[in-house]
Image (cartoon, rainbow, N blue to C red; front, side):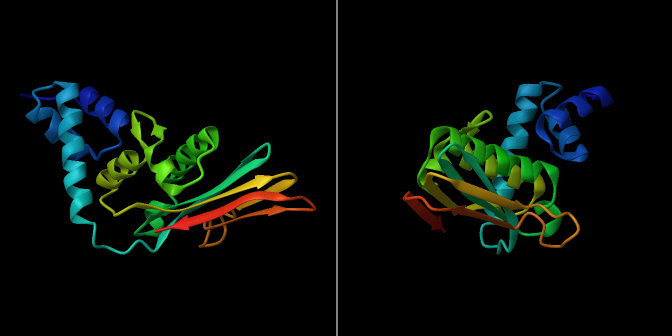
Length: 182
Protein backbone atom coordinates (compact mmCIF):
# COMPACT_ATOMS: atom_id res chain seq x y z
CA UNK A 1 0.00 0.00 0.00
CA UNK A 2 1.26 3.46 -0.89
CA UNK A 3 1.38 5.89 2.00
CA UNK A 4 0.86 9.62 1.45
CA UNK A 5 3.41 12.16 2.57
CA UNK A 6 0.65 13.91 4.55
CA UNK A 7 0.03 10.73 6.55
CA UNK A 8 3.76 10.33 7.19
CA UNK A 9 4.02 13.94 8.40
CA UNK A 10 0.95 13.54 10.61
CA UNK A 11 2.20 10.34 12.29
CA UNK A 12 5.70 11.78 12.69
CA UNK A 13 4.24 14.84 14.43
CA UNK A 14 2.23 12.56 16.71
CA UNK A 15 5.10 10.24 17.66
CA UNK A 16 8.38 12.07 17.06
CA UNK A 17 9.75 8.99 15.28
CA UNK A 18 12.01 9.22 12.23
CA UNK A 19 10.55 9.54 8.72
CA UNK A 20 11.76 6.12 7.54
CA UNK A 21 10.40 4.42 10.67
CA UNK A 22 7.05 6.18 10.30
CA UNK A 23 6.76 5.26 6.62
CA UNK A 24 7.64 1.62 7.35
CA UNK A 25 5.13 1.42 10.22
CA UNK A 26 2.33 3.01 8.15
CA UNK A 27 3.04 0.65 5.26
CA UNK A 28 2.98 -2.42 7.53
CA UNK A 29 -0.19 -1.15 9.22
CA UNK A 30 -1.80 -0.50 5.84
CA UNK A 31 -2.51 3.12 6.73
CA UNK A 32 -4.03 2.40 10.16
CA UNK A 33 -2.64 5.12 12.47
CA UNK A 34 -3.37 3.29 15.73
CA UNK A 35 -1.71 0.11 14.51
CA UNK A 36 1.27 2.11 13.19
CA UNK A 37 1.66 3.89 16.54
CA UNK A 38 1.65 0.53 18.32
CA UNK A 39 4.30 -0.82 15.92
CA UNK A 40 6.48 2.23 16.58
CA UNK A 41 6.00 1.82 20.34
CA UNK A 42 6.98 -1.86 20.23
CA UNK A 43 10.07 -1.10 18.14
CA UNK A 44 11.00 1.67 20.54
CA UNK A 45 10.80 -0.72 23.50
CA UNK A 46 13.03 -3.20 21.66
CA UNK A 47 15.58 -0.46 20.93
CA UNK A 48 15.53 0.69 24.56
CA UNK A 49 16.09 -2.87 25.80
CA UNK A 50 19.14 -3.27 23.54
CA UNK A 51 20.66 -0.09 25.00
CA UNK A 52 20.27 -1.06 28.67
CA UNK A 53 23.98 -1.76 29.19
CA UNK A 54 25.17 1.61 27.89
CA UNK A 55 26.46 4.43 30.09
CA UNK A 56 24.39 7.58 30.52
CA UNK A 57 26.92 10.35 31.06
CA UNK A 58 24.86 13.33 29.85
CA UNK A 59 21.43 14.63 30.69
CA UNK A 60 19.24 17.38 31.97
CA UNK A 61 18.80 18.61 35.54
CA UNK A 62 15.87 20.91 36.28
CA UNK A 63 14.57 22.49 39.45
CA UNK A 64 11.19 24.02 40.23
CA UNK A 65 9.51 25.55 43.26
CA UNK A 66 5.84 26.02 44.05
CA UNK A 67 5.12 27.75 47.36
CA UNK A 68 7.06 25.85 50.06
CA UNK A 69 7.85 22.77 47.93
CA UNK A 70 10.84 22.50 45.60
CA UNK A 71 12.20 19.57 43.64
CA UNK A 72 15.20 18.79 41.45
CA UNK A 73 15.10 16.02 38.86
CA UNK A 74 17.81 14.45 36.70
CA UNK A 75 17.05 12.65 33.44
CA UNK A 76 20.16 11.10 31.92
CA UNK A 77 21.03 10.05 28.37
CA UNK A 78 24.11 9.02 26.37
CA UNK A 79 25.00 12.16 24.39
CA UNK A 80 24.89 15.92 24.75
CA UNK A 81 23.14 16.10 21.37
CA UNK A 82 20.06 14.40 22.85
CA UNK A 83 20.47 16.13 26.24
CA UNK A 84 20.25 19.56 24.60
CA UNK A 85 17.29 18.63 22.40
CA UNK A 86 13.99 20.41 22.97
CA UNK A 87 11.99 17.16 23.25
CA UNK A 88 14.33 15.76 25.91
CA UNK A 89 14.23 18.96 27.95
CA UNK A 90 10.43 19.11 27.60
CA UNK A 91 10.13 15.51 28.81
CA UNK A 92 12.28 16.35 31.85
CA UNK A 93 10.17 19.44 32.51
CA UNK A 94 6.89 17.53 32.12
CA UNK A 95 8.05 14.88 34.60
CA UNK A 96 9.14 17.56 37.07
CA UNK A 97 5.79 19.37 36.69
CA UNK A 98 3.95 16.11 37.47
CA UNK A 99 6.19 15.50 40.49
CA UNK A 100 5.60 19.01 41.85
CA UNK A 101 1.84 18.75 41.30
CA UNK A 102 1.73 15.42 43.15
CA UNK A 103 4.26 16.58 45.78
CA UNK A 104 6.14 13.34 45.18
CA UNK A 105 8.88 12.57 47.70
CA UNK A 106 10.75 9.67 46.09
CA UNK A 107 12.08 8.74 42.68
CA UNK A 108 9.91 5.61 42.73
CA UNK A 109 6.82 7.80 43.19
CA UNK A 110 7.91 10.02 40.31
CA UNK A 111 8.34 7.04 37.96
CA UNK A 112 4.67 6.09 38.43
CA UNK A 113 3.20 9.58 37.87
CA UNK A 114 1.12 10.20 34.76
CA UNK A 115 2.99 12.14 32.08
CA UNK A 116 1.07 12.50 28.84
CA UNK A 117 -0.60 9.22 27.95
CA UNK A 118 1.55 7.01 30.20
CA UNK A 119 3.54 7.00 33.41
CA UNK A 120 6.88 8.80 33.65
CA UNK A 121 9.00 5.66 33.32
CA UNK A 122 7.12 4.58 30.19
CA UNK A 123 7.48 8.07 28.72
CA UNK A 124 11.26 7.89 29.24
CA UNK A 125 11.39 4.43 27.64
CA UNK A 126 9.32 5.67 24.69
CA UNK A 127 11.63 8.67 24.16
CA UNK A 128 14.61 6.30 24.39
CA UNK A 129 13.14 4.24 21.56
CA UNK A 130 12.70 7.34 19.43
CA UNK A 131 16.23 8.68 19.97
CA UNK A 132 17.95 5.30 20.02
CA UNK A 133 19.78 6.20 23.24
CA UNK A 134 19.57 4.77 26.72
CA UNK A 135 17.76 7.13 29.08
CA UNK A 136 17.07 6.89 32.78
CA UNK A 137 15.53 8.91 35.55
CA UNK A 138 18.57 9.12 37.78
CA UNK A 139 17.94 11.54 40.61
CA UNK A 140 15.20 13.34 42.46
CA UNK A 141 15.47 15.67 45.43
CA UNK A 142 12.73 17.34 47.46
CA UNK A 143 13.08 20.39 49.68
CA UNK A 144 10.20 21.62 51.80
CA UNK A 145 10.18 24.69 54.00
CA UNK A 146 9.83 28.44 54.06
CA UNK A 147 11.88 30.89 52.00
CA UNK A 148 13.13 28.39 49.45
CA UNK A 149 14.89 29.85 46.44
CA UNK A 150 15.88 27.91 43.33
CA UNK A 151 18.41 28.49 40.58
CA UNK A 152 18.41 26.59 37.31
CA UNK A 153 21.56 27.17 35.25
CA UNK A 154 20.42 27.45 31.63
CA UNK A 155 23.38 29.28 30.06
CA UNK A 156 23.20 28.27 26.40
CA UNK A 157 26.77 29.44 25.79
CA UNK A 158 28.42 26.74 27.91
CA UNK A 159 28.77 23.05 27.05
CA UNK A 160 27.34 22.15 30.45
CA UNK A 161 24.02 23.89 29.79
CA UNK A 162 21.11 22.42 31.70
CA UNK A 163 23.35 20.33 33.94
CA UNK A 164 23.31 22.35 37.16
CA UNK A 165 20.48 23.23 39.49
CA UNK A 166 20.42 24.18 43.12
CA UNK A 167 18.04 25.05 45.90
CA UNK A 168 18.63 27.08 49.00
CA UNK A 169 16.59 27.94 52.00
CA UNK A 170 17.49 31.06 53.96
CA UNK A 171 16.72 31.62 57.65
CA UNK A 172 14.03 29.01 57.85
CA UNK A 173 13.44 25.50 58.96
CA UNK A 174 13.70 22.79 56.34
CA UNK A 175 11.11 20.12 56.95
CA UNK A 176 12.22 17.68 54.24
CA UNK A 177 15.38 17.23 52.21
CA UNK A 178 15.83 14.04 50.25
CA UNK A 179 17.95 13.15 47.26
CA UNK A 180 17.75 9.78 45.62
CA UNK A 181 19.78 8.54 42.71
CA UNK A 182 20.14 5.21 40.98
